[in-house]
Length: 219
Image (tube, rainbow, N blue to C red; front, top):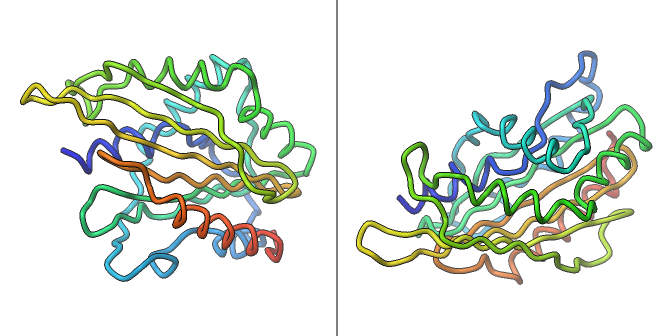
């Protein structure tokens, strides 16, 4: 069940996925270079296809709560979910390319909105972990964090949800989310952990790689 806690609940929590517009092929190749791959992680980390079935549902719920409509993307890309050998940790990222820098900046305001933490907490508190019929969290905490000087603007959050288990124990699942804005591009990376927090050193290393790629990307 631990993998499903990460892949079903966390990876579909805040994706802001809407259909991309046509005629965006020129931006796709540049955006693909911003996706995290297994090559960015130590040997043994395994990619699996990202499950985006409920991405649009969760995105719409949080956007409605925040009062910030989801802007249409020119290009929308999502990496695989990449997990460590134990299955307790995973990472992935999404890349959104908008028609103009102004539109990207406006959309980025969702992450910096004062309502964002409250809306995420409310949504996750009502989310059955492991899929329909799964247990609801007994406690959810969402905390804003400071990130390094990535891109033109950045926003970071940590989330902890306590999930009751069949044997009467509680499993803490964690997520660290980092969104970076540069020009007309938003890159959002997420670092998930089941029973423990994703390595801060490893997460920061991945963010530095993404920031370097973003500076050079032609999107």
